[in-house]
Length: 122
Image (cartoon, rainbow, N blue to C red; front, top):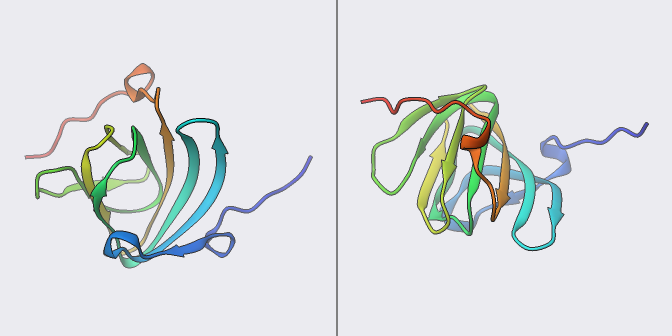
């Protein structure tokens, strides 16, 4: 057995798209459009508004915050919940209190295969 770290100290700060308080810990990259990483957002953190470069699944593993797509309405998200953006979809996420999320990106990503969909809040 071997042990590895993917906490914020194993990552690097990201400021693209006017992001604030964001550290990315890469976990895996594969051929084509495949990668896994852990985004660490500090309190008040923001992943700035930008287009997805392929299908992207944002799985919250610590804390809580909000996510949005192309529309300005923000949707609450917490541990055990995920947001999915399609290729080219504009999106943004943030948190008042801090949040960590595992981010999967792959051309063939399809969360409907196993994950139950949640209703969007009004």
